[in-house]
Image (tube, rainbow, N blue to C red; front, side, top):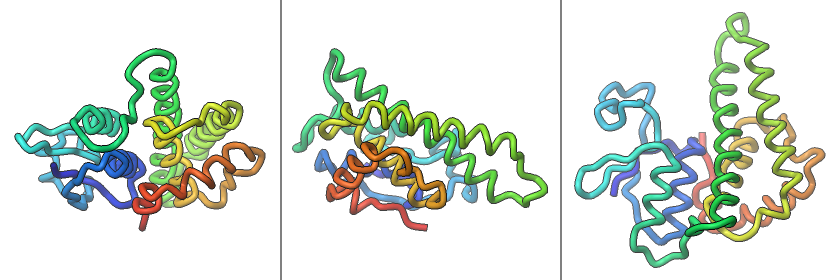
Length: 197
């Protein structure tokens, strides 16, 4: 299987972590979706990641790819709980983590625009969404248990904040979340996929 990705993408990182935890080898194809018009033929959304299966089928959007990988026959543990409260807790954590990224990624793009063109109001909304979700994760840090799609997604999200927004100091006032991440980030799959510029 071939994964179109960017080493800096937190969404692609989540998929790469899932693959490593499951013991699935992926052919990694570095991709700049904004600078490669031909990529639209692979993923019409022009976003990464995209996974090309061995039969040519293309999957995109990191939650879809992650669940597909976990559903395959692989030697690692299952990372999506099958049913019940554990499943929905993990999916909720993934949604919260993706929500942080859905604010953080466009916030970074907005901050790269010339200062006169930046929207302070929009930047404020992004920051508020990120901060509120981090506070909610701090309040439920005792539910960050085990290795599953939820905890992996949260680790990738806060890892992205360290990478792109170190001045935000997201750990301040969130000691339980920070302590959890310090331990979880030592997993080989997280260390091997740490974002690069």
